[in-house]
Image (cartoon, rainbow, N blue to C red; front, side):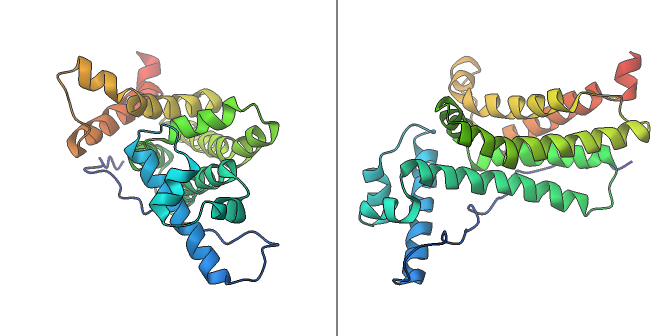
Amino acid sequence: MSRARPSQPVKRPPPAALKAPGGARAVAPARADATRERLMAATHELLVERAGADVSVGDICARAGVNVAMVKYCFGSKDGLLQELLDRITAGFAQDVSRLDEQELDAEEKLRLHVAAIVNGYVRYPYLNRLINTQLLASDAKVVKRLSRHYAQPMRAWHERMLSEGARDGTLRKVDPTFFFFTVIGMAEFFFTAQPIMRQAFAGRDLDESTVTRFIDHTVEVLLHGIGRRASAR
């Protein structure tokens, strides 16, 4: 069985562009689309620089070099802008698992590569955990439903399928896919959320490529060996 070990973080491109919503006035649509992308890129950059701390509409527009009114024109509100950014990031995770499904690999190897992709997603978007929590704490039923439908449920369903395949071929034991989903995401997000603790408590270790690679290897080994048949026997 292949045991590929990721040697360096996956280099994700910026969030993929989405088309402007229907109903927008046909006034320089190409320019409006370009403005949307500049606002998205500016928001991403500021959230990375500020470790997920809140950024104002004024700061976003100043970085993008556009009038503050363009946030409302392009996204309806700042919340709409953040929601679209989150949609693009989580859509990237969905694309990752779709690409894995196209590969001739067993379930355990697909899960191994999937865990690496999740960790590298948090490298690319270190503010992801805070952005998700901000949306959830808003207690907006529509937001929660959207996150569940487009992020949690599809990923949990893929986990269930991979875990079932692994159980059938004898490499994995039976595991609750819901708990597995929260375990994978929880391990990745806390590692990046708690970086100030790591720097303070563990000799100022930086989040460099070597550290990320070691964390991926550690996470994969803990998760997949922990649910392997041999682990159950022990």
